[in-house]
Image (cartoon, rainbow, N blue to C red):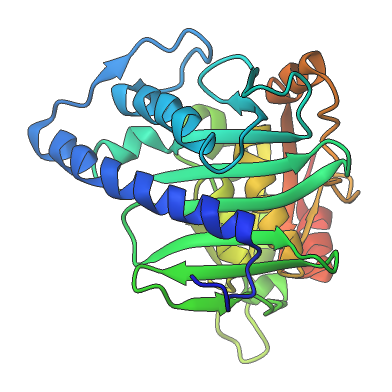
Length: 309
């Protein structure tokens, strides 16, 4: 990334920070995988969720490094209560962080992601989001608000190649690749498996008689980033709901790429997260959202109409 890049400077700076963090954590995660020493901790804040030494290290390290890019901000991480960082007692920017998403798989060197959303309290909306993929060549998914007020999305490879994300993926459901975070057998996979009408429509023959619909597994914000890039067509969460730090970074990136994210009633999920005060930020960090995200509104609506309450 350079001064000639269409990506705003703040987003470039945070993207470089995320890339550096991934470079530091990647060998540690591989070492954990091959030795079986995964550093698991008791998760007091989120009972039942996997928590490792690596999550906690990244939480603290992000807080230290972000000050070099943003002198004052509210730091809202999955791993602790929101806090003001820097000399300004009431900073405009709130930085939402999920230091290590899918950490249960990251310590097996399978999948690992890191999320940052920069939210302007005065504008009541995000101004930048970066989702990093620790183990794959497509390394960063990014969205930012330009000086012209337009949100734009990009992906960046490990080689530094940048690609603008503007493609709208709009197949019918019978030809779509739809993903879901279906890893937990009872909490996630069971509710999806009971959606017989949805599965029947996804399995229906296309115009050429072939069954092209597919269901796949995906995770957190990265699932919405994959739609933004056109790698997948839609994702849905109908069981437990996603926490703010899992949904919002990917939602903003998908929004900037021209996609859509709605609730299960078909209403668009707003970008305004209501992060006005520390209590409101705490509340937002403790809420969950069920949703459908897709490259096009017609596909999102087709999925919504197929889902049974």
